[in-house]
Image (cartoon, rainbow, N blue to C red):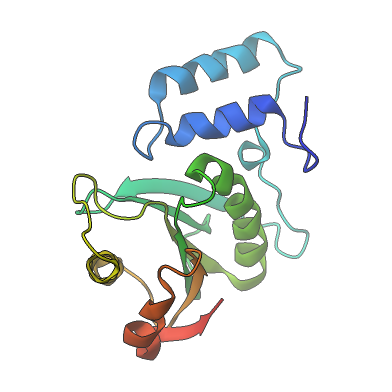
Length: 183
């Protein structure tokens, strides 16, 4: 059973297991899925575990990792295997329309293309703000998001990819001098 994009239910379940525990892997489920793959060879891990490597640069496979910021927000990172990036992309990926587990597969594919062709390091923020800190206004939300961006080790100037459905677009002004571009 697959979607029109070719993603199976097993792929989506696997991807969800990576971020099911407050944006981090749900280890018991992840371990169970790996056991299923070992038992039934016809089940295959999603594409991000079988990394596509562009023929333009076969020596630089993509490495994915994630961590929590000091504010408790999940930060996802894609980078060239050697760790040498010549530019940085920051993705603001707010879960307003789609949960992170559904956005991650698209970002994996984007990361493959961008890293293979531009040796970039990509940071993605997958949540609206720190856990346990409800915002009372859009201004509070944006101030918290700007503080979070300021604590990231971004190589400047960086490219901002805004997938916030407009909620974070006004950050272009305070970040303007630090940006190489925005999408």
